Length: 218
Figure 1: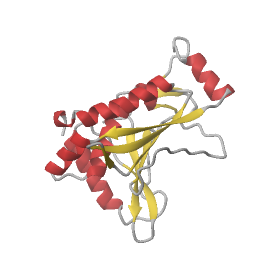
Figure 2: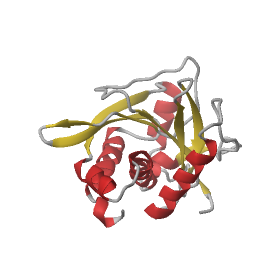
Figure 3: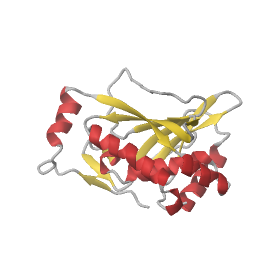
Figure 4: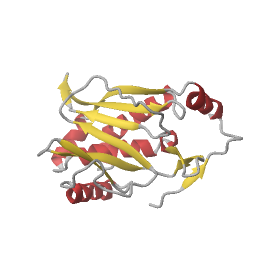
């Protein structure tokens, strides 16, 4: 899928005063943490002999890509716009030295294609050390990573310098069983300039919806 960047029409964009306020005046970012019920997703994954990591990565990317607020960025000239899709930029863990590396893959809307691409790229870069295992990451990317060692109840992050990153940063942890349901903690780090609580809640609810409707796409 070819990446296409569409500049925002500043004259008609209804969100412009909110963007200006939260990007220039308040400069606000926030986290929302939620547990996603993956009981059906995990059941189907195990039934078909699939790995959970690329499968849940697909669920996240499908949800992200159906919400235009989370496909926004600046281009190389500082123009604000929306991509027609974003690709996953995710981490792989090196068990021998306990380090991680970033890898990115092309995005495919069909699950079987997406799953195979992720599996192939993980195999290709699994032994490549360094923060960036795969070079040439495109401008239209969404960062996703896993913390499979902990069922966290909250996740926050901060930087000591300003960043122009508008894409969400998504983390998910170790799944657990409670009251007969298997759940997984998910944290979404958002730039308030491009998304309010409504938009981020919709993203989280879309992740849940894709997980619930796993039989429609797996």
